[in-house]
Image 1 (cartoon, rainbow, N blue to C red):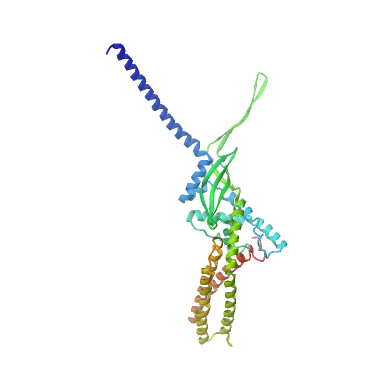
Image 2: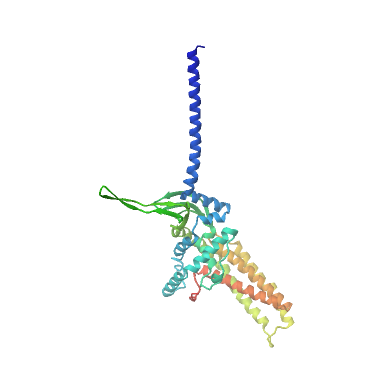
Length: 391
């Protein structure tokens, strides 16, 4: 091999190594550039925040989920959407009463929304739906909060996934696919997202005079704390209710019609049995004799409780549409609690147990609560008959 050929091959080898080094350097720059863009840019975008939120919800990471959702802002707007027609289907209200209740539920918005936030936070932490208690316990505000939660659809709505995020100037819009579990109606929820980060500094604008002309430089704002993208409202929640609620109401109406004959027939049976029960307890001295207690106990065990069980058996045989699940569940709970109350009463009178009689009285109160809920659902009633005082 002559000297020229040797030198030419040596130069080609050197250029090839230089190209390989350049390609390796470019590849490393691309990797580091991608990592830099991901952590410094993409992780600060609303799309990243929403994907992180969805993953956190499905993984049960409550703290991460809460970091991307402003529950206080969401519940206020959602409450207005939910209560806008709360009294529309209450056929027992006059126009004047409906107006009074509508105004009243505007006044108690804060208490109702605080209760909703508490319910949601408890669910996020424990996976269980509970009631808020305190001022919302029972009917102190004139409404069954459990029934309100059912009407909100929140407890039987499943999050399927994120469809997309569109960024505007100072906020973004995200769309999520959800499905209402009872009706199986799919829906696309649209939410507004805002960056609530507030750790920033600004370089103010300045005026300069150059060659006799005044020039103004605009100010610049720098965010020190990164981003804090949060969902602040569900923009079409009312649309979701309008899409699902009519189907559920139709399911409920069908179930009520299909069980009306059973309910009516057993209401007559229970009235007759109640009359017999009262007659068996009558005593000239005001206290039942030992033989009366035995007779009353046997009548409850052999007649009243079997009638309750027979009624529930017939109700359970009626197909339950998904939209009527809440009502069917209330009826089952009412029957269960009523039977337990009668059993405690039997034990109380046969064993002279004041504790069991107290238990029977407590269970009877629970039964009345269930029965009132059932009546409100059947008659499309939203509120108690009397306007409560604002706490």
